[in-house]
Length: 132
Image (cartoon, rainbow, N blue to C red; front, side, top):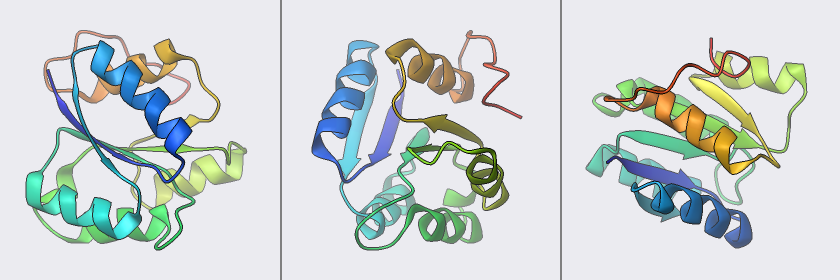
């Protein structure tokens, strides 16, 4: 399947997401900090990045902007995964370079549907509420 980079500082949330993704056959690399995630994304070029926005060292917005400026990581699909689920936060996430937005808490099938949408050989349909 795919290699997915998860940038998430909350271990409980990370464990939940990793279980869901690995049960679907994906390989997951977990970075707990933004700088670590940015380094891994540039070096390993995963198929997809799941980015928490509120991180302890560098916020997800800065990481996404940095990745978008530097090839070859600039083309990676990035999904913002955060508790900030108001319309303004969604618009901002897409404005600074996220391809989609997933609000915490979420159901496992919501995560898998959104992830599948961005994978190269996906057959899943687009979750229209989250992707534009």
